[in-house]
Length: 178
Image (cartoon, rainbow, N blue to C red; front, side, top):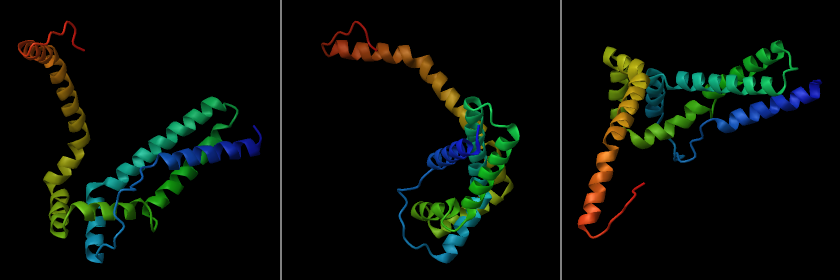
């Protein structure tokens, strides 16, 4: 593959990666008090949100580079590794740059939390209980979703039968309920 084709492919990967990053278009763009803004940044740090965003971005870049490698196996691995490193560096810089992801979060936190609530949240997430919560939140959420799905499947036939019975009492007969 010549350098021009590789440059085009790399630009496509970069643009697709940027387009897939979360956009916070719904956030109100009002000026946030500087003390509250500083505390929001402290809360975001305590929650590890930006680190998580960077891990997701890395996974996304890995996926895009792998896809590129499958489509263009002639691109040397060293070139893909350096492209990956450059993309991650770019994304990381953009997270913390002025107007970057960190700044995009401020009006969202401002919209939903008072300054006092932010302060209490910082205390919680910096506490041993808050740190524990953050360390288990994702696996726990996965387990809760699995349990909820299983429960739904377990009662699905009963729900259908109750609906059929109710409709029959109202004068409607459904032979098959999807």
